[in-house]
Length: 298
Figure 1 (spheres, rainbow, N blue to C red):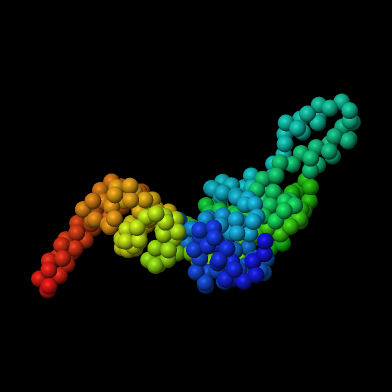
Figure 2: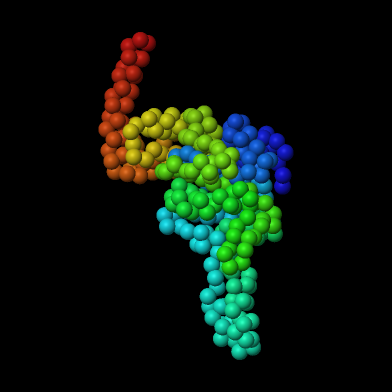
């Protein structure tokens, strides 16, 4: 399925419950139109991986995902050899050694990993290289051939060219700086925490049975929490968990006195919870003063 305009792309993503604004939708559309990889950067939990998943569904393409980690090397990401099958081939009495030694490294014995699967796939796919910043610089350099020419090289077999060009999405949480060489080969897209209005739209789409007042309260509350000096700011997915928790607790509006226990769905570190609990006392006092002042004026 080919998307013919930014508007069509944005609408198709919305059908997959992913909200993207016009500017970012245009950037992503241009990356697709130019057949260039798209590097999506931003804090953890802002929807980078979900965007790739929604895009694969919108384009009706299979998703092939490579999860990066420290120590990931080219062979683990690209291919491996089927050693048991090679051993059986060595034990075969039907062929001479001269026949076997060349046959051992034929394509029959290659086990394709995510990168090679994407290159060899007869159907167009979306290749997600997730959290690239967790890998090291050597692996990043290895990717340049794939990102620039849509090809990969296996020393024993030579170069493999893409059967059909995959859509390549790379994500990074900005834990380390990526190289200029990699950035040159990609279209860059920055995702940040959504505005209050956009987060309201996301939560309403994800939780159509939850009252709009509670969703608005949660989004405004989470926006205030994200301004605190926390180790990990709450992500959109944690906002979704939080509003669902408050619904389970039968809350129709946020009550600052009734958040104990539910805050654990919003924040993940004890130190962050302590900071928020301390700040809640200040917010509660400010709320009391506001109500008293409002009562005096009336």
